[in-house]
Length: 465
Image (tube, rainbow, N blue to C red; front, side, top):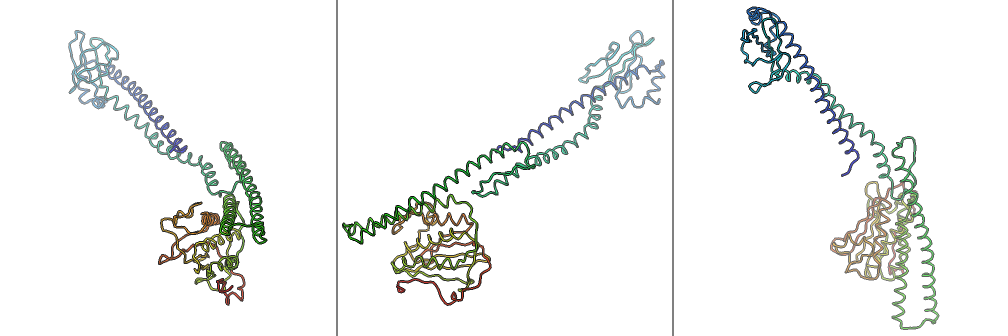
């Protein structure tokens, strides 16, 4: 994953680590040079301070003060007379060949030595020391110098993490603001003093994009409104002219043919209405919610579909399931038009697929602090394999009966999703009938109960005719 935060942290931490390594090497190299100069001075001082009497020098090396630290530094002292005969050699040290005057670096027995020779009256003094002693001292000096740097590295890494996290906070805030927005919130983002200068071009580009999307969405809503008017009116007029011509006898033909044409005309009108409803829901801007009586809405829907139910001899009624009492008004906070469209589609779908003489119940339910309703029928139900797919647009199962376009349940699912409701389909126990359940409606304090609500239940049957 390409991450700006990871890239910044990687470059900063790796760069700081590389810089620390280079700085450590430089400090070690400097300490080594300083240690070399210090030891060179020590070698010269030892060579020049050797007593003129060799015996005195031997006694001083054995017990004399001032030469105790020479053994710790592994300094080798050799003295030759003017004839080149060795007259003095340090105890327990290897023998080195005589060198010329001044400083030299030689290798003897796989050991590198730093040698200083000086010519004195009647003798030649040579002082030497292993290079490893110098390197060990340089390392100790470097470690003493580097430990603050070693302590600074983790502190600097933590500081880099904090600074990068803090620096990217406006990006995360902008991302959270965009994530929290709904799909229909197309108003521009506000540019205040808290927006960094680096993010202003991005915010301005987003605002420009939101403005173009808002214009396109508004154009779509305008088109849908115009299309709804232009399509619904001619189809309704065509149906009225059809019925008038059929009644006054000016339209003649085979009765079965006329009946099929009328069925197709009704199906075309319903398909256009459903397409317009679905398109309106897809382009629907957020609608303010109001207090809606779920019971009143159900009674109105039962009344609207009573004639259609009577034509098929279907027992259509409104019921309440405890803890919902018959006198409960069931006030909810919802979009009244969308909820009415949702309920009408469920009832229309149930009536179309329930056989003649069947039964459909609209049941009001309550779960904790939310209300809902169920449309329960005793029709053929839906195969379990198709329960999820029936929510797709234009899907109709192989066993679907009657006429339909496969849009009714898609409209229901779209409205439920827009209003934050839960819509589920399940077959009834025993394999007979289907239950379409809608839940999640936020309750409001019920208004004064209707005095007639407890003594009546909305029910339309074929016997009421």
